[in-house]
Image (cartoon, rainbow, N blue to C red; front, side, top):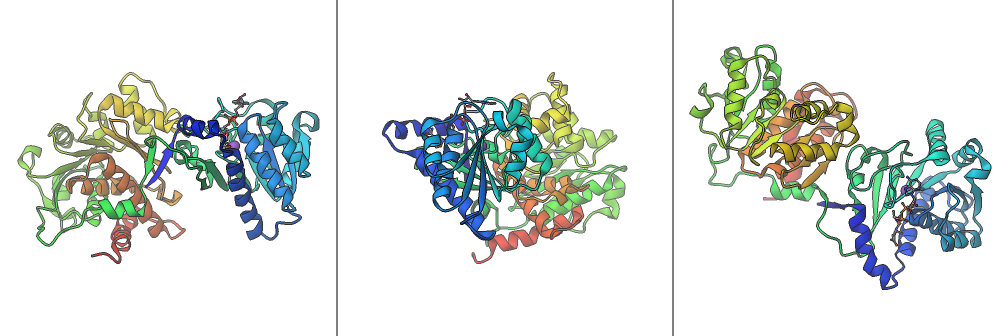
Length: 486
Ligand SMILES: NC(=O)C1=CN([C@@H]2O[C@H](COP(=O)(O)OP(=O)(O)OC[C@H]3O[C@@H](n4cnc5c(N)ncnc54)[C@H](O)[C@@H]3O)[C@@H](O)[C@H]2O)[C@@H](O)CC1
Ligand SMILES: [K+]
């Protein structure tokens, strides 16, 4: 499990150590300098290479300056570009004493400074850290905009990419994309949330031995999947493993039902009862799927998956609503989202993409458009969880899961190739399988997101794939997970 924290929580945890005289900054700078040295070494040489340091007014700039001091002492040509008048005095003095060159943005100007920085082998972004309020401003913003336009820079972010909110991952204004972020004391939640994660690159963690509070966000890893993924025991039979009821598809969209069913079967559901249009029931279903009784109440299941491909079909919509109101664990996706009652119980999971979440919030008196959700994904997912009472899985390159109790997960194992028609239906199937097996909604949502992403990577192999391909890859992902146990 990867745990992440708010900037405020990390700062509060630093306080007692700082008061006890522990030089946390030296440890942070040492970790940062080592990350830079490793990058320089793997790309050729350390001695004689050049590193540009972008320096802001606070302790984040100080970390970068102290790292610059260490690099200078290793024979790296270091140039600090000071973005503001204010700079951490002792760090600045140490950097100069080690032979670092200083350039002031106000004197050198944006264009000249940008071309100087662009010539360096590596750039360290030490402009803003956890003390930032909003994004980069004025000439510093212009400098970063110019650097983004030049492109191709190898940037290492100090603690977090400047302009990314440490707590929420929101991005204000222009941000330099890093190949790596070296973060101190605790991984900041904003590095694992969209859109901030997209700027962070690889995340390296420098442990400062802080006593941290409960995590603000958790990300499941391979061990968590292995620990929690349901596997049949010797005494299990097809019913005891959890029966899933599926209300999906319509005459207009039969494919969505197929994909959701494939997803659920691939993820290990041993018994599925399907409710849908007669055309699909009469031969269009995977052979493993059992046609269910026509009403929700007449089917014995452990969980429901409702909504994929449900459109303009009053009978299917009625079933979706009955399933949502059944009191059983239920995943409501796509066509079921507009049918969601004002409030539901915590056994309900919804899986909107940004546009669907915006529509759901707008229907509940919070006018929202897709771009708002994309800009501050966590805030909107959290609001939807509070308003509806459901666990919310917000789809995207980084998937965010928020429970009505406020637990936050994020997963981003996927590949951009996953953005393909039907991919969400397969995800719904995987998640439905977990709910039917009795996994609690927030954990089920995070595990489904993780396995869907992994299956996408496997199916893609670096190229295009189909949604069916994702479902076909799921058993292999699980086989690799279970390898060597039992
Ligand atoms: N507390 C500590 O001793 C440690 C802190 N560490 C570093 O310290 C950082 C936090 O330091 P600070 O609290 O000084 O925060 P920052 O380095 O983010 O600087 C905040 C200062 O910048 C100014 N500022 C805020 N928003 C701005 C904006 N949008 N544009 C321009 N200026 C703005 C404000 O004057 C504020 O005082 C962490 O990110 C980390 O890099 C590490 O060295 C580990 C130990
Ligand atoms: K930074």
